[in-house]
Length: 450
Image (cartoon, rainbow, N blue to C red; front, side, top):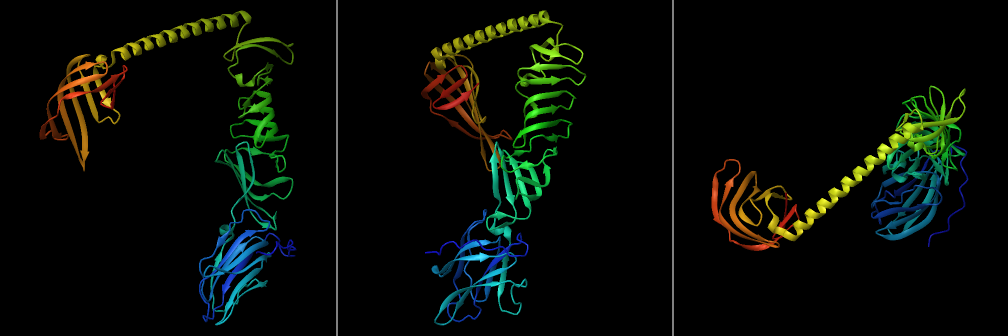
């Protein structure tokens, strides 16, 4: 069984944001058990984003060095799939912890040592070295997921705590939203050099605990729109929205638009109370309005246009009511007509079928010249290699509501490009199932539409 997780390693006095490494080295002697060695790092004790891995088989004189953020790691060493060692190994900033597979003719051993020398490895030793970067051993850490936003941090850690600065990538509904370089996530605010995908500029910081832009912050967009107030994550929630045309909304905001109950102040002066901001700029009805020198009173709008008074609004609303009634009546008549046509078609079935029909591929065309009985024609195109072929045959038919009896003439099979007849053939006549609903014709299981 693995040994217990050790106590937290004291931080080195050097830069705590520097990575360290674990080097898996095989004795270069070549005598005895010199092949088939593997190291597996199962997990980190405290750090997030670590990606467990197992080395390939290493042999005498080979070494792989893995860059890691400082922490304790559960390390297993195998030879030919047999577990030889399991322990927790400490990694310190700027140092190399060596896991050394030692062996002789009659012995095998795994030794762990630390190399604080920045040179790391004596250049005179006979060892082949591969160094693996931190991007291979660690992935991004998800800091938060909220209201369609997700933030992933890539940067230094030390025993489970973020240290120094890194990069924070933020997406909204899976699409790039913002990126923060030199991001510091260690305090109650996330700070750094932020760039938004839509070009906005925000003068406040992001609060780590509440997952929102700092209340009272101002966001400005390239089109001239700005907002000051409270936020949900990065989205304006409630406050003052100054629109690109100069009008100002005070109240709830959704998707950079008025929403809910609030007050609209016109750029040229005056204000209007809206029970539902979503109605703007096409508001219709009676609203409370006023101005600096005008007492509060009633204003009347239709489709965003200011009216002379309640009589004009009433006339327009009555006109809309009549138009809506006529539209509803026309829709009901159309539905009744279509229902009657479908009923007639269903009763007559295939006996009502006539006209030109095509299959779902568009390669076959069926023509029936009249309902009940008459003459017809069938054409279909097929492909072989680089050539296109045409098959055509005429016929006479008699239909019932649920069947069609067909008597075929002679068919021709020809080259579609040149018209050259390649073969003449006959097709057996007969009766097959048939149904027709006024648009869809199904003959012997094959669908055709007019």
